[in-house]
Length: 154
Image 1 (spheres, helix red, strand yellow):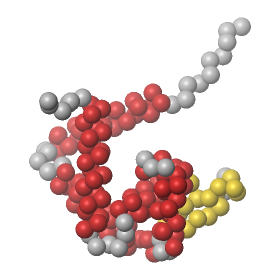
Image 2 (image 1 turned 60 degrees about the vertical axis):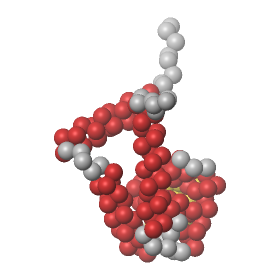
Image 3 (image 1 turned 90 degrees about the vertical axis):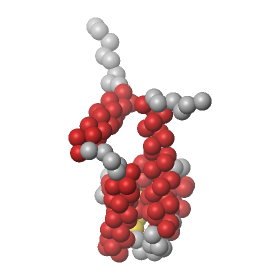
Image 4 (image 1 turned 180 degrees about the vertical axis):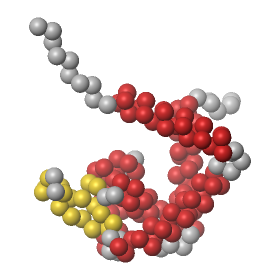
């Protein structure tokens, strides 16, 4: 039986395979960081820091799983938790200067992986793929956005 070639199936499967490859590449890079910790570090870098719940959401993991990654990163001095200026009860997770070289190495690993994954695409095919994915992303965000409450007619 052939695998489905629907948009949802392909996007999900490409994401799953990409994550698996990323975890293998990080594990084999000898960077003394687990794949989960590396993913957390890269997400924290990508968003410029944020609440643990946001990091967990972006990673697609439970908040307690993200917490364990962040705890280990904090023990190594790669991240710090600071009071959230918008809510003193909440904590923001931020990268420290010590994380900069490791983030750079992880970026090199991910850049090489992207080049391998996209090998064979022309520049036009790459641009078309990215534009289609960006359009789908915007559409999904719009479809999932909270709908404004309708005001009853008087």
